[in-house]
Amino acid sequence: MLADLMSPLGLHYSAFIPVLQSQGTDEQIAKWVEPAQKLAIMGCYAQTELGHGSNVQGLRTTATLDTNTDEFVIHSPDLTAAKWWIGGLGIAATHCVLQAQLVIDQKSYGPHIFVVPVRSPVDRKPLKGVTVGDIGPKAYGGFATVDNGFALFDHVRIPRENMLMRFAQVTRDGQYIRPVHDKLSYGSMVKLRVGMVADAGIKLGKAVTIAIRYSTVRRQFHDTAKKDGSKKDELEQQVISYSSIKHRLFPLIAVSYALLFAGQSVGADFQKMTKQLLNQDASMLPEMHITTCSLKVWCTRRATDGQEECRKAMGGHGYSQFSGVGQIFAMAVPSNTYEGDNYVLCQQVGRSLLKQLQTISSGKKVETPNSSYLNLLLSDTPHTPYKFNDPYHDILDPKVQQHIYGLRAARLVADLGQQLKAGRPWSDVNMECWNICFAHAEYNLIKQFNERVASVSSTTPVLAEPLTQLANLVSFDFNFV
Ligand SMILES: Cc1cc2nc3c(=O)[nH]c(=O)nc-3n(C[C@H](O)[C@H](O)[C@H](O)COP(=O)(O)OP(=O)(O)OC[C@H]3O[C@@H](n4cnc5c(N)ncnc54)[C@H](O)[C@@H]3O)c2cc1C
Image (cartoon, rainbow, N blue to C red):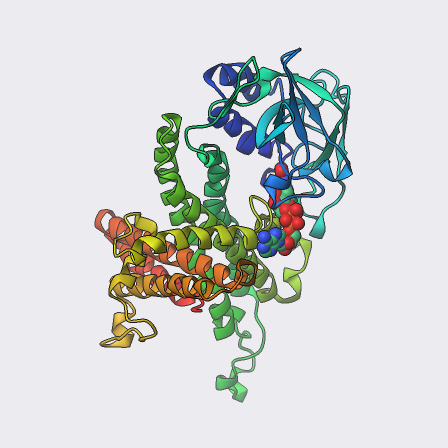
């Protein structure tokens, strides 16, 4: 059971080391990564503060350069600047990669990342100037095995070399050198979101496996169609035979597979992008950013709603801790909030697609594959329903599925563009962005699922039929807006 729970070292491996690797110079990687891999130091990712989470530009912790001593001074000006929620910081971490406002000569250059020691690796005592501890229990008893922590810094001095400088740099004489591309440092956030997609599929898969096995052995009521005296001793009906149980659980199997396939696909794209980023080539970044943001929003929402549905589908016993589903949900549900709150992330998807809409408005085609559906707008007649020849047959055709999901997403983006043009303020269109984010994710999920069916069918024909059924199920499950 413990093997399935999260550990205080989770973010050491999923955030601390990857951030060092992707944002550190070669010398910084040589200095920090090996001790981290040997657990001589343990790390965490300290971005969120008590007063600011989503608004990263609003972070209050400062890292002020002191050119006399060639150091940065890390400081929390008030309680709202306390780092908060940081996984691994409560007890375990000796170091953090810390987001703080870089200040040189009283000028702020925005949030940058610094390696900051917080505890002695020898006796785990907090270092001078650091107030650090655990933030306490979390909702639903979730994350009980993770020491989410807080930290305040009182003029803590670190060497200048502790700022991660693969992209932006600060020289010995206090010069700030901008990164070649201002979004180069987003790579590590993309990585975390990439990992979340398949992970959501696995966790939903576990919950739905439990619920389906239970529904197969659970029996309630005799089959009313067979009500005659002679059938009195027959077993009651398996609850899985009820249409409402099938309706609630079977699509979740398909969704689990959709998330696994999408996770593998964005994982492969991420590897490609990482190689390019190391050479300061950020051309794949905008597309990867919106793909991973939209999938992160979709997978966390859909998987955790699905886990809760699994619990309900098991009746009273689902609510027992022993069903295991409650624990899966309790661990997974904050994923709607961390790595970017879903309702905030979906706005980034909306904004990016609106930028691409400008390409369409100028009569040109969008080249990026995951949003190429916008090209449908070049020949679309708005508000005209899609014309099926034979709806019951056409809807099973992957090309038709892709087309109608693409058309829906494209029309939602075009509609948002019109509304903003007509003067609706950005803060009023949150739900339009939410719908666009879901539509974008669903277009890509169905595209990737159908591509996977095609490739698996050629290598392993026996899987073609069940995978096709799952692809159809997942496409019927999407809620059209
Ligand atoms: C279990 C868990 C683990 C975490 N681990 C870490 C960690 O290791 N390191 C770390 O740095 N952080 C961590 N976090 C923090 C997490 O990243 C933040 O909680 C998250 O970014 C949201 O920020 P917030 O809590 O300040 O919410 P807020 O930004 O205050 O959001 C509050 C509400 O306002 C809404 N909202 C905010 N801005 C807008 C907007 N512009 N438009 C529309 N709605 C808006 C949100 O949707 C939300 O409903 C963790 C959080 C949790 C729950």
